Length: 218
Image 1: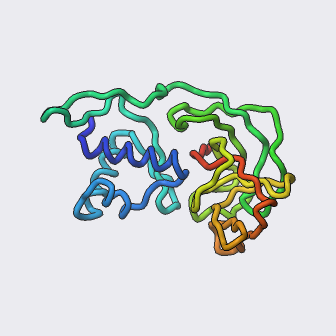
Image 2 (image 1 turned 60 degrees about the vertical axis):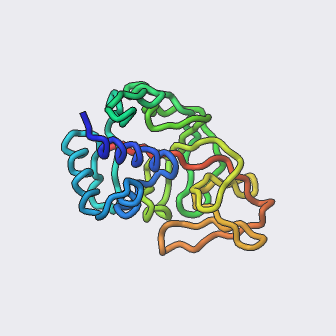
C-alpha cells in the first residue's frame, strides 16, 4: 500500500506524461504536492522506485517512466482512508494503435502513411482516439524524445500554445514540434539548440494531433 503522498505523486507524474510526454521537474512536483523542499520529492521518488512503480531512465534529466499503477488508490474521505476506483484502463490491457510510419523530429520528412499497428499499454493513454508514429531525428531530445521512440498521438486539429504536436506542412510533410504563435505566423520549435525554429503561414500548417505519451523499446 502506498502512502497518500506517494499516490499523489505517482498520479501527478502519470497525468503529466499523458499530457505532454515529459515527466515533471522536481520543482513542479514539489509545488504540486505542496511540499516545503525538493528533498521530500527525492524521498517519495526513491520510495516509488524501490516499490517498482516508477523507473528512472539513465543518462537523461527529468526522465521518469511509470512501470505500474496500484490496483487501488488510497485517499482521505470523511476523515479516514477509503479506496477509490483505479484508472479506467486495466494495467495489463493492451491496445493496438495504428502505426502511421515515421515522423521527423528534425526537418519534416514525410506525410502520415502505413497500415501496421503498435501494441500499447492502455494505461499510457487517456480519453480520445490515438495513433502512433515512429520518431526519426534528434531535434526533440531536450524534452526526452529520442530517435526510434514511438510517439503516442491523440487525434485533434486544435493546438494550444506550448503543446507538442504533429504538424502537417503543405499537406505533404509531417513533423513533431512544439506549437507556438508568433504574430501572424505559426512557429514550430525544436527542443535541440542545434536546430532553428520553423515558421509557416497558418494556411501551410494542419495540426493532426498532440503528443499524449512515448513508448520506448529496449
